[in-house]
Image (cartoon, rainbow, N blue to C red; front, side, top):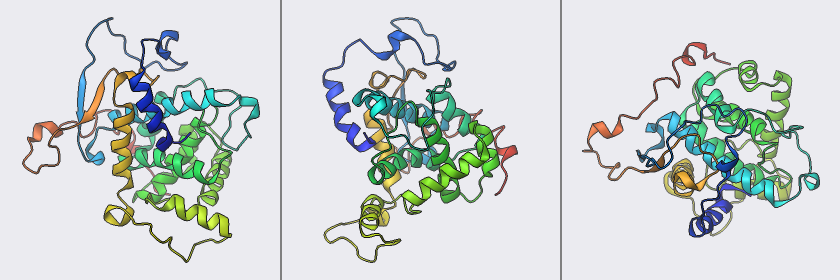
Length: 292
């Protein structure tokens, strides 16, 4: 199941939600960052800026880990694992580190930009659309996140780290990361710049056996900014699906997220944009950032 398909599931869950959440079994292994709060205390509300590039990376990591945990919960329950085709992204057993802790580790030590974090979610839809054997689940999420963030950093950022650095942070051999990266790039036909018609073009190229399609589908109209505003769409969609604290099995950060009212106005109170970067996100990472 992809992010787009999960939107309908989320709407159904909001209508029929109950108190029997996944949290009753405790936090996932390695999820040491889960805060302890008193029972019955109100969940704080956090208003996020309309522009994802101005959002705190800590809040982005929290949102994305909720989105991924939501998808994993659905995909793990759809088909028995023994019936799934194994891919290069599969682990033998689910890693002990939680999705939140792993993504926070990648973000902190590789200085991941907000666009890279959102692009990693976009890549889920792109990859699953042209590679049906792949499913984001508890066995594939860690290697996919490492690969997606490494590819997005190289495609979207002016400076990025070496694969040796990414592999060390991600806990795999550098040679394995090379294999994962090549497999990803070849399957998406090197279309790593997020654009709203990438999925359609990849399908056409795969069907026709072409490297680059020379025909543009009739009737297909690109969105704003010639189709490059797709990350803005995904940012809003993630907030809509898992912004509520009760919407995902990931309970690491106790907060309700919503878009800031009037955040697009130029005369907005500057104090509302104070949550630009969290103090601990990049302090250590910027000093270790190396160009490839």
